[in-house]
Length: 193
Image (cartoon, rainbow, N blue to C red; front, side, top):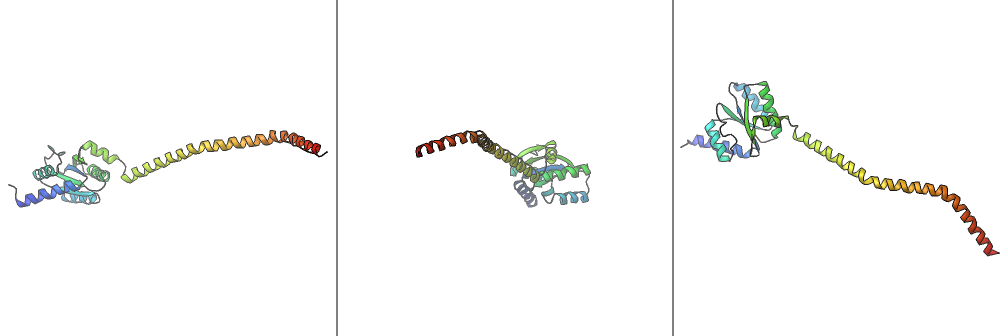
């Protein structure tokens, strides 16, 4: 039977699993308290970084329905609970691991789907959500401009054809219209006599 303190820790971890959109399991063997504090402060904008006993983490993950960490909870493990942008958090973890090779990314979970360490690295290589949205908006704007040009082309072609016909009528029709007017004038004067 777990002690009340352990039950409270399990409940707290379980709640963090439920509240976060993603979680990344890391091994921190050899990192100093100062380095862990630095990592926590870097992750603060997008989540939190918790060190907990593996057995408690395993029980909390099962309680929250997270199965991605089964078999990975060995050694000194810590979890980054991501509540903000998962891409930014993955970049923070990747960059920190590059600067501090003792931090090892073991795996993770994103929206209930398990992620390998390589997939977390790929996630970190993505551009931020804002940049991706801006690119999508730019692409849509470009497609809308193409559609406007496509729909405007027949109208402008029609206008050019009508203008060309008007110019042709003025050139050829003006000479043909003058004899026709002269014939009408002659017929009208013949009626008067």
